[in-house]
Length: 36
Image 1 (cartoon, rainbow, N blue to C red):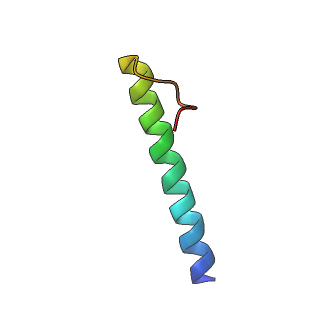
Image 2 (cartoon, one colour):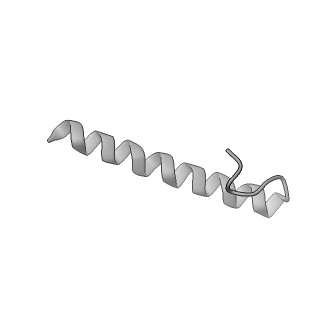
């Protein structure tokens, strides 16, 4: 159960990080959020 928790936590953090990064890129006109 702990392993599942950490996998879900890491996945959620990765998603939020990418979404936040995408917002910054859009705000600065660098790239779209779909660009990894």
